[in-house]
Image (cartoon, rainbow, N blue to C red; front, side, top):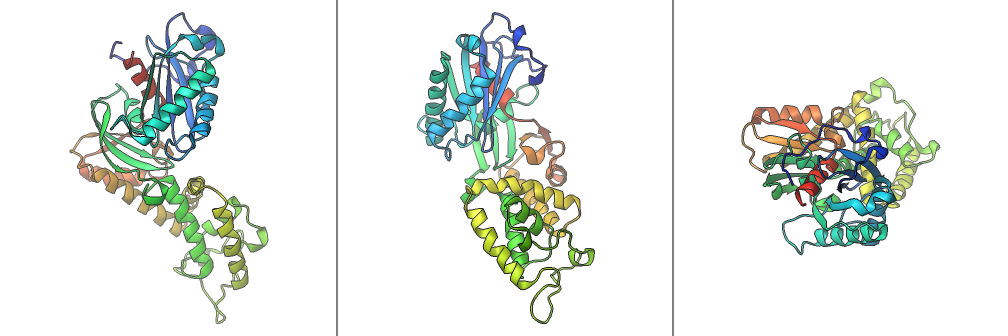
Length: 362
């Protein structure tokens, strides 16, 4: 396969009726929140179809469920009449790596993807598994072979890529042990800030209302819909002699906590990432607590990149909703990387990189 990989067309530009008689490939970007499949021409990489489904972290999603999500996304991307022409499939999976043939995430991802392809009757001769960060790096213009990659979405991880293979990583240790600066980390910080406001340890923040609403708490336990400007500008809530804040009485705050905790515990922990946009919205409205959360998140991502000992001017391919053109961490992280001579080269996801890697496998 020619290594000059064309990526001039957007996925949305295809018309499946225009598909020629050539071979086809499928690239998958399989992350902690979403699975995306892209069908493309094996000859020039031009997109022919796409599909999406649920999350696919290879270490946390059970293999049967992962296979279901993969089959759903691929079925949307590849019309039944074209499935016999798919010659290569490459998936970039969160939770998987190419560091060893027996790496658990890699084995789980390969098992699930193989099952999904059998279910759909896709006879691809090449089925390859890589990490989502390798796929994201390969999605950059020119499909680079060497440099740095940073993923900041539901999770957060940075990696050094050599010969299109991840050779060193920092961060990315999952919601329990790491992923500092990620969407999960930000969402958890939002809940922690709301709980601290409620029990009197933290300053006032609009996140208490936003988090409570997002988690379906009863309206009668929420603080006032709009806290007064003087309260929001204070360092701590103005408690009265009885230890209650006039805007949010003590009994109401205790009821808030008693409803919030089970609402959080009833969901998988990673679902806290869905609260990250609430922090970005509150920060745009100059909520001091939300602004501090985002600044700390940017600090954490800068530390992750710095752990890889980047060289001045080295390319950093970045992906994930936190770092896009409108991402809440783009500006603060850019400011932190500038003194190191580093700039971010953002890509939407790893699906086009997975297509490129699939073409290279032929």
